[in-house]
Image 1 (tube, helix red, strand yellow):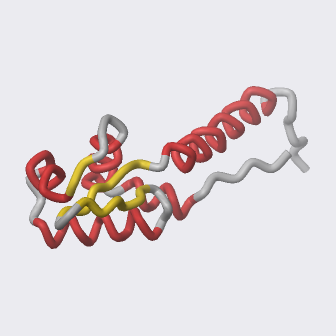
Image 2 (cartoon, helix red, strand yellow):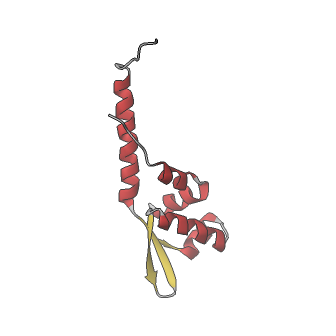
Image 3 (cartoon, one colour):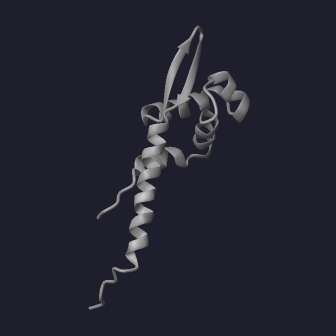
Length: 102
């Protein structure tokens, strides 16, 4: 069984600020102002990271008056976690598979 992990999604989540945003959104739905306050990032920098997360399907937006709220899509994270769980399970059985040297 070949196990694969979504490397594009890992790259998206590997950025420290994006991971911080995802961690915050795992607790509650927040608007951009809240995220600026919580992370200390500049508005333009934060907006760029939120765009990357949106395009990767990690977060979705919810307009509310003049504000835009962001919420985490948990299924994307769960799918990635499942891929890692499959990889770990494959490693557990790998001890039984030893390729002979030529």
